[in-house]
Amino acid sequence: MTKIYFAILTFMSVGLYAQVQKDTIKIDEVIIHENRFSTPISKKNRNVYIIDKVAIEKLPGKSIQEILQYANGVDLRQRGPFGSQADVSIDGGSFEQTVVLINGTKIIDSQTAHNMLNLPIPVELIERIEIIRGPAALTYGVNSLTGAINIITKKPTKSGFLVNTYAGSNFEKDTQDTGDTFYGTGIQVGGVLSKEKQQHSLFASHDKSNGYRYNTAFENNKIFYQGNFQINDNNEILSSFGYINNGFGANGFYAAPGDRNSSEVVQTTFASVQSKHNLSEKWTLMPRVSYRYNYDDYRYYGISNLKAGRSQHYTNSIAAEINTTYKMKRGELGFGAEVRNEDISSSNIGDHDRENFGIYLQYRTTFIEKLDVNFGTYLNYNSDYKWQAYPAIDASYAITDAFKIIGNIGTSQRIPSFTDLYLNQRPGNIGNPDLLTENAFQSEIGFKYTKQNFSFNANYFYRKISNFIDWTRNVTTQPWQSNNYGNLNTNGFNLRTNYRVNFSNDSRLNINLAYSYLDFKFQDVIDDLYSKYLVSSLEHQITNTIDFQHKNFTALFATRFNKRITGPSYWINDFRVSQSIKKVIIYVDAQNIFNTTYYEVGAVPLPSRWFSLGVKFVTF
Image 1 (cartoon, one colour):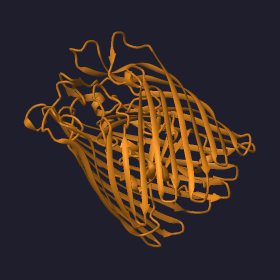
Image 2 (cartoon, helix red, strand yellow; image 1 turned 135 degrees about the vertical axis):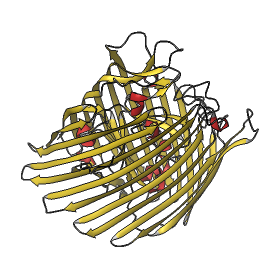
Image 3 (cartoon, helix red, strand yellow; image 1 turned 90 degrees about the vertical axis):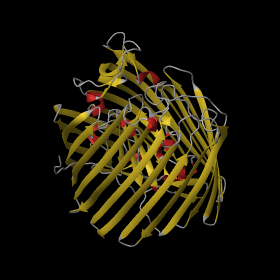
Image 4 (cartoon, helix red, strand yellow; image 1 turned 45 degrees about the horizontal axis):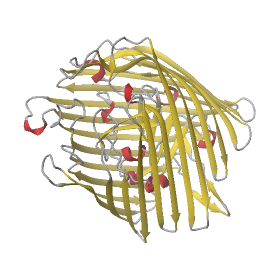
């Protein structure tokens, strides 16, 4: 069913760059256009973490999934490595409770959030990744219980092209099948055309591997286009289109050990058009339309038997949004609406559709000098769950230019996916059409300190999720079924610091260190039920990167420590070194260099030590 839709939500970007001035590094402000208001990051009242393009270029990762591994507070649970498949969550929530966005356009997979990171965007086109922690319904609408991840793409300033190729291996052999050495290869080509009033970017890539253990091979093809158009000083348009075809061996992904030979193909098409119109000095209008199609083909017996154990899902999502802001004498008013239609046609979920309509109202003001307050309400109607309202307020007080106290109280909602509600995949998993929506309440307090080349952030939060949804069962002979498992209370704190040292005009050192702690407690749970996903949530997490740059040579060492509620703790260490020679960049990646054995989902072991060599030719 296709209808016309309107709403809000716009994230635009200006960028971040470093200028060397004497003995300090000056960081220009990142401007976050979060739906309605344009806010410099230093004045943001929320806990926002930025991975900028400089960090992305230095990290030893070739996909969005690999980059997110290094974001503190983000729990990336991979089944298939190197971008094949991963679940993402923030601060102890489930993978269904985090919203992913591309330039402010929400990527909601109504079938299952397992496919939400199946994105066609190359990392070379990413300006930055914004990670917003805590319930964010006021800013992003439904399904943002624990936070949001917004991927901002670059606006080209120079024409040129890119060719990037790499090859890697763990130098182990597939002793259970072919006897071949495990390997991975890839090639990417792209070009940008930058004119005064329009800019175009087109990228395509092909990645292929025979895996790292039995039946983990994958083949991934992507294409992505982006067009920026400046009609005049007051009107601009951003359009994008992407397609990804991702096929992979799914050994142990969902039903170990019986699914040893299973495979899966996920195809995603994404398109959006958004614009910004300055109607006057005070009034701005920002509309958007978007479409997402996803095809998920899971074969329990692999390609050997396509007539049994096969699940095929076809989902469509079409949405429209309109957002407006108006500057008044004593503040700024934001208002907007969004509407979304989702439908699915599936071999074991059935045919279903639903509609969602949201209205936003938000007001920001400075009551007294240095005190900034932002409050409002998101009112949501869903055709299955009717009307619900989610108010929120956040505030900050700047004690000095360098030291600021922040706090917020927010509420949010997560609507069950079609898989949660209607899946019929006996004897493995079954849905529950009687599920209630998840609802979250969170309060947070913290501070930010920024002084020249040093910054420190500390935050404490309390969150309660009512009617928490998880897949549960009483005994191992029963199928997993989705249930409102109980009320989940979470206390947590996170610390994050960054220090930059400028040795000379040609040499600099950058150190990032972050730690997160979470304490979980369930109330009013159903007795004698085993949980499928919650038991692997992170309790302790440390992320650390140290990178050094001298002229055109860079070296980055990254360390990650994870301790989950159950299971052993583990350290993962990676590095990348690169050398630029005019327009050619040669880089070497080493991941899991100490050969740690670890698991992020179920009984799926992740790759041992892996080395890659790549060459990149860039003219823009």
